[in-house]
Length: 115
Length: 110
Image (cartoon, rainbow over all chains, first blue to last red; front, side, top):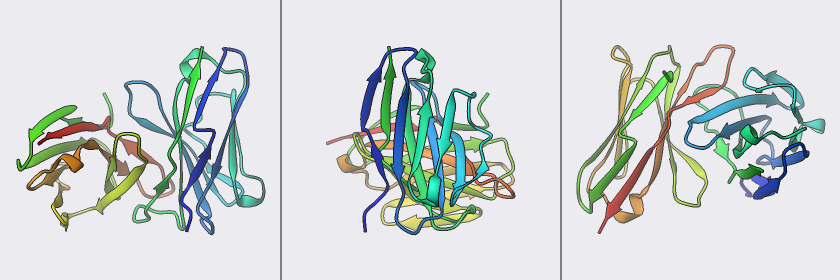
């Protein structure tokens, strides 16, 4: 069974440009999470999808970030326009069910560098 | 101040040593997760616990709910244990977010 995949693995863009990150969860996992780690800081929650619905988007930093999960399968996270402070590693995770006892399976992350 | 604090931030040990990584949290939790990330690798879940102790191979996780403190122990450490170890608090209830510590970078030297 394939794990969580993310694309691209790395992205280098200039300030003001747009970048779209993609996450493919494990097949059958309704719950999809986006997290971000900026340099030297802890990983922080961005949002949680249940199927195609945003269950919790309290961690989204501002309206330059737009997450979608059309059809409840893969998800995209678009940053437009990108700023220097958006640099970091963006992780996606998925789980079959929500809840504190559900293992979240993480993707390898997308390393974003905004110059 | 982070809601989840880990110590130490960096740890170097000799092969065979007993290792302890600490995690303190200031929020009410439903579960405390320990995760591992090898260099260049993905994040994998090691343990989820809300009371007592769990053991898997040479890894042991303990938690004291009253003191809001958890520890991850590695017995007979090996160079392949070198990784970043991260604790994360799951708040439960209506939210399913994990609140992460900054991680502990462990290097086990042969």
